[in-house]
Image 1 (cartoon, rainbow, N blue to C red):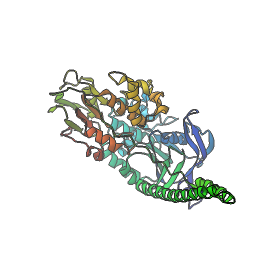
Image 2 (cartoon, one colour; image 1 turned 135 degrees about the horizontal axis):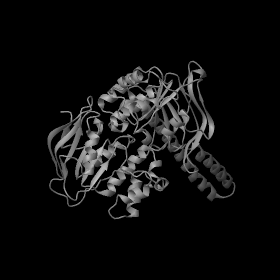
Image 3 (cartoon, rainbow, N blue to C red; image 1 turned 135 degrees about the vertical axis):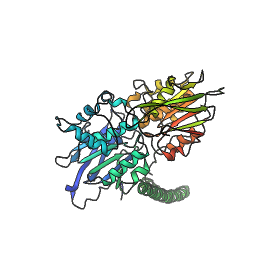
Image 4 (tube, helix red, strand yellow; image 1 turned 90 degrees about the horizontal axis):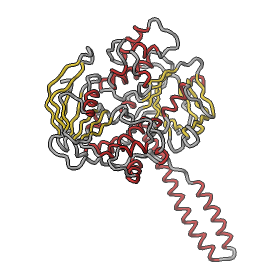
Length: 495
């Protein structure tokens, strides 16, 4: 299907539950997101919203749910359409709520049978949780399930899922995939997980960060890639033919101009034709930029045992009771450990304790710099500008080095003076990686480093981690990512 063409509507326009008609939106004067965008979504469709980090995918969801308003154009929804959005992360003000209060906030009026309804949706997302438990006490994967359940409990006509697989383990992703395959209502999903998307997607809405238009395609992500590749090939072929013709005409025009007399008139006519052909050249679609290959330098002059772990505290995901397990792990320079286990067993809690130096049963050698990548980016100060955040990671501040590192992570002059908190989740992830490069840690602790990150960047990140020469502890539920990284030892908290 051609980009920008409306989705086929065999039952007529009334079958579209959602239409964007020439919608434009900007964040301030210098940050345009959408430019006269048109697209429609038919009832019962399951569609993916894709695009580069920071392109504005989450903004589209906020426009649909009504928390943002278009500056131009209009957004048309079917009469009495109910919409629910599953956010990427639990907001700070909701982390202190109980499970029951968290779900009650999803309704404008009191729901008297709320407890059985909560238990029903928790069953759908495969989570066992006491209703009086505080949200912040759940792991990242369990919070992801709660966010999904909080949208499902509203039983909306249009379900909006923003990065729903982030933090989910393999079982969680399989459960969600099965649910979406059977889901009868309309669903829009933002995700960077191609395999997950291809299991249920019927169409793609692609937000082009360069043109700020939505391109609409039928089929899954692989169909989208084929369509875009074919289109680029066609455009390049046409431009190559025109370029050859233009050069031939320029050579002839110069030859005739030198002859003088009537030949100059012929030369002028040919130059007019050249201008017309130049205008016929098409703008070849710009592919999403990929971050440049990078190296995370290890802290110099480190040796011996960098970290030793003799015991770990794990949590039974069903009973929520902790238990201590004896282990024997020692990491030296160039040794990489993968930490495994299902959602809720305590991986993030263990990594946090290791990074802070407060983990019972673990010792980090004196003087070792710890680079900690948290899945919720809470190691970043959201009130800092990007410049302040990157400079703070350096042992000796160096503006030139900082800017060069930032540029390699597609952090441009447009972003450098913005507050970290105003960036998209994917851009925060790139800032976090840039900080690790500038920090030069001796021990790298990574908690779900693929979350929110554009899939194009993942092979580059995997190669950098594979080549990292310090000690590393990694948690990731993405097998394809882990397979690209040298792992010397595995600690499975479930066994």
